[in-house]
Amino acid sequence: MKILFTGGGSGGHFYPIIAVAEKLREIVDAEKLVDVKMYYMSNSPYNQLVLDEVGLQYVNVAAGKLRVYFSIQNFFDMFKTLTGIFIALWKMFLIYPDVVFSKGCYASFPALVAARILRIPVIIHESDSAPGRVTKWSAKFAKRIAVSYPDVASILDPSGTRVAWTGQPMRSTITKPTLN
Picture 1 (tube, rainbow, N blue to C red):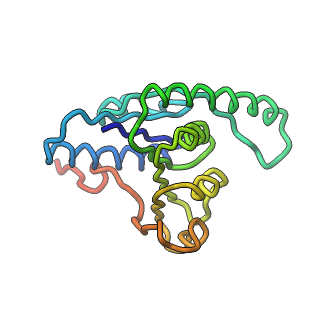
Picture 2: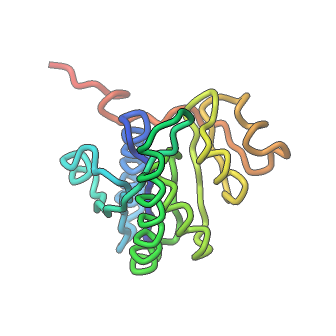
Picture 3: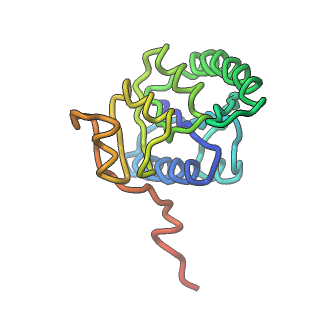
């Protein structure tokens, strides 16, 4: 089984991905599942040491922001994103994961486009009370949507059939502090 995580840009996206990957690793170990590979596709590894600890292999893909204000960077980032989509499509084809887990944001856009083209199932998680543009777009084709706030469910899936209120994923080091 292959699972690809995508997101990034900030710790608010990165560390919930780590929390989900940790929990999956626990399940894999408890159930003695073999040959489970996990990948993290983004424009930056954010924290390579943490990726290595959890067993996520980093896959680099370019991504550019689309700012809502005027910036010359929007022009250049458009090409960065287009390049990222083609690279993501190629790299995702080589990996061909069974599922893609997205936290949204501009860094996940190329991976989500590639997953859509390759018809790979997508699961998204929205941590914020107001979903971003990438999350709103990917909610249209996501198989499942997890939210931290119940009010967001109606925004992302008006029918409510694909949404689960899961709360915010937290790393085990936060939920089970060590006592000295």
